[in-house]
Length: 264
Image (cartoon, rainbow, N blue to C red; front, side, top):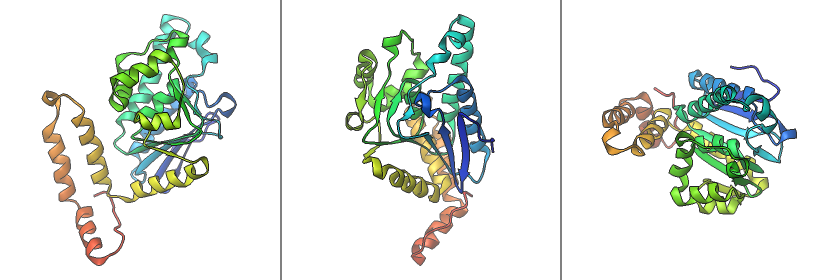
């Protein structure tokens, strides 16, 4: 388990891995070190058999993350060489987050902009408070977003909404984000902690093999039919049916008790 750092706090609460973006004085803007630390934290949670799901949030009550730390741009994104180094770190963090086999939740308060929204989009679920605000201001800065950066947004909200978000560089409130499918839930500010805790505990308590299978098969379903790995999908389903957890689930149902799943 990584040691907590000043800008990225990593911890585990029983079966739930937690990552806190911790620059509240900068609305949790993500520095180069934070991008690198995020990739490492997610990798560590993937390797930790005790972790069944991962929760990402921002410190304080003003922002999930307002995006990349623009104060670093002159030094770390001011030349072609530094841009490539920076972009590689961002891609590694986002790809690692999107690729983790375990389910992920973004818990969102306040600003969720630019790179911060990129992090949230790589999570499986996004649960936001009513005070959340979303946007990608690239068109106001002159930044370019590549195919891999835009694909999650397009897959989640569709091409027309993605163009609206990017062309206008506007900020959208939580109700608008819910309507366009950008978030899964919009709840009152004072209900966010309880709602996310309930989702996290519910997911962590469900059969890990089933949840992992669903996550991977959904990813395969988004691919072109010619590239979809049907054999892999079937093997994941078969592994569920032959698992100890499936037997435990059947017994628990018959005995009218909560099942105890072990991920095998």
